[in-house]
Image 1: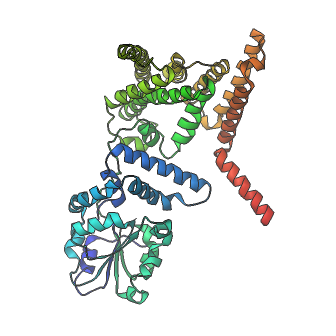
Image 2 (image 1 turned 30 degrees about the vertical axis):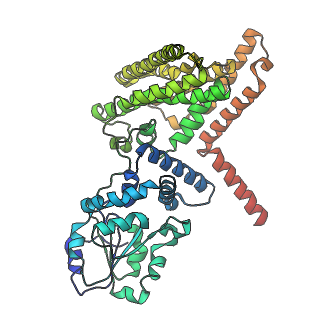
Image 3 (image 1 turned 90 degrees about the horizontal axis):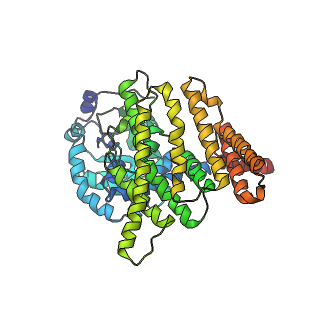
Length: 484
């Protein structure tokens, strides 16, 4: 591994007449930032761009699980491809915006010392349509640019490789007289191939795209539980899946539950943020992710506006007003929205109290938070009998898990999903014995789906893998045994 060098050594190497050509990395070297992140951050509307980026990341993750690609190689390619195709006006805006970015983040030390009589080659994992306007803004529009293209994954330099691509532009016999400057140890292959290479770290802007943009659940996924696929495994396949299994199913009810769930989560997330940042301020050893510190503030008004907006849509799905009489519609929506607003205020208030209690005393309030998180929807969507058993089992198991954590025990040894399944079976059995009802009256189909979901979640927790990954690995193993 090459050693890092200093600025004076690099400036000395750039003296006129020493080396030709001058080969430069772009991001965090010639450009003191990440060009892809700056392009994504320039897109408008930002919320649409953020949603497209999240969706593209999700698709690439699925393809990675299926063994079709590598996430780190294709993530940025998919982001730029999707945003460029679905927001074509973004490139037009970027051409105008790039000049200001180039002026503000250009590496003045390199620009001022690049010999004017030597050819300059810029090689980057970034993307040609993004970097080219930046080079023009730096006055290097005539430089040879070797960067990824978005037409096909084969033109992505992370898969094609910088060294192999550079060979088509600069013959290998010229590499002995070339000078290569980069900030990234990922360029070790080129560093080894070009004798006069310098690895140097510059002071650069590493801020990601969409910084400061409020999106419901963003702090939870990226700040509180980063790099854990929390949205997929917890929010989607746990919290929301439980609601679909517990409450009466119809397509309008499902849509209502989705909207009301997001609405409640907007306020629940305020509690998460308050919990983490009070811990950072008041505790000597807070159990808080480093990513949460990337969110120095949380908006006061926007979460409530989003919560009320999603609630209004959810109410229209669950209890649509009698369309025709404007006054009746206003009264209908006002009353129902007022009821839900009181629920949101209650969630906010309970979480506010919870965050200000001593950690040991929070055990008493924790179950109430999850009762509100799972039962509030009964105001608009009917809760089934089996659903009531499932919700009770959920509150019991997750509260027991939190108690184990607060008592300082090893929570990783507790499979709360398995305990939820056991509690659900016990509650359902007790209900049948006490009421004399039979399973047919509760619904075999719903019971089967609940037990299957509980079993899958228990196995996933036990194996520390998603069921999808286990299935894929099993199929691969069977294929290898068959053709091996």
